Amino acid sequence: MHKKNFIHLLSHLIYIILYLSLIILSIFFYNSANLRILSYVGWLLLISGASILFVSVKSRKKIHKKRTFVKTGIYAYIRHPGYLGHMLIIFSLIFIGQSLINIIIGTILIVLLFLAIIEEEKRNIRKFGYPYKIYMKKVPKINLLAGILKQLSH
Image 1 (cartoon, helix red, strand yellow):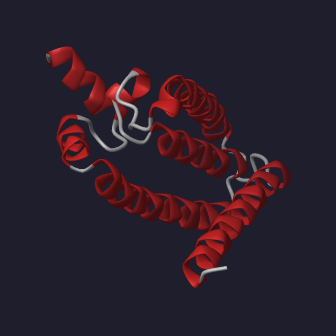
Image 2 (cartoon, rainbow, N blue to C red):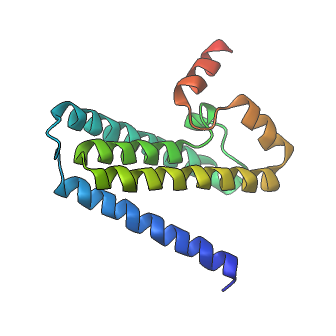
Image 3 (cartoon, helix red, strand yellow):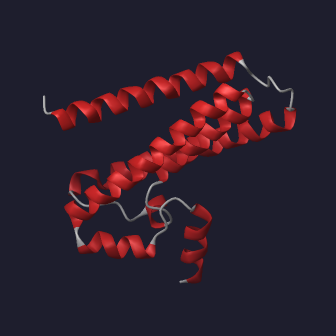
């Protein structure tokens, strides 16, 4: 196995372990600061994140076999809906658990997701070239509200 592939695989494994830890800790520390409003916000974020992930997967499945990048569905509004969905879920778990360890693990996961977005952008530019650069100028990275407003203004 190449060293680069090993590091990539290891980083995925670490991410999965941290994500599962955050889920378990959110259950264990559920509403530990007794801030009920935060737990309600957390549940809304969880539903929103899961919905965005679901829509993202559905949009990708429709075009996956064409060897091009997806520009339709939710991808017409943001370039990385899957990452946004995971970020919302991570924030939801922080709000639901309300503990310092949730904040620390959640912050690490968010940073890892931003790094993954940067790497994916580089890969997409190498793979798709100029058309992807045009897409990058037209469609926000993860800001769904800005993407919706851009589409409405056209």
